[in-house]
Length: 224
View (tube, one colour):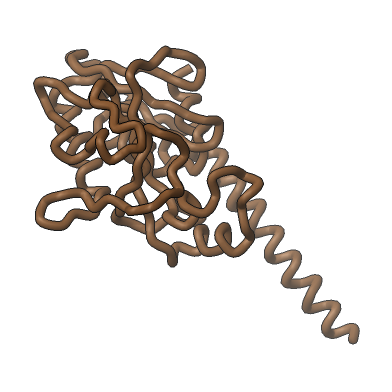
């Protein structure tokens, strides 16, 4: 009996030590800023970073002289079917979490464990907006056309495609009348979350970002 107890205590100690190490690394690396010297370029295109307090979206103009997202991101795919939207907020994440957890009260342990394991599939969540107001949770960035092209490439590569078209997920599990889900590439895990994806998007566009982060605060602290 004592051997069993000792083993349990040993494994518990290893788990707690690993968890503390993970949290320490996550916190420290999120404070390290990258691309500080690369953002002083032509300010041609407005984009936004938007958080709901947990999850970060990258928000882009739906149409501009540089790119027309409506060729792929179609407002008619939403319940509202409103053609007057001006912006598309894009987020990447675990497919099961997105579709099975509309609120935190709906979160199941099985969904969470599968999400952090890196074994589940992912989805792109696109929310359309008519306008955006800057706030602590919505930051406006002005980027150059070259950096916007880099961002477009990163985002396009995050979508699964068939015959050059994004694959819409047929589901009623949308969050409102102005959002839609698409199949995505990549794997969600304890080390690469929805916020890690948004952080990588900013890196791809040569914008300020954390060296590594899993949280929205790890991104937004670099824009305070």
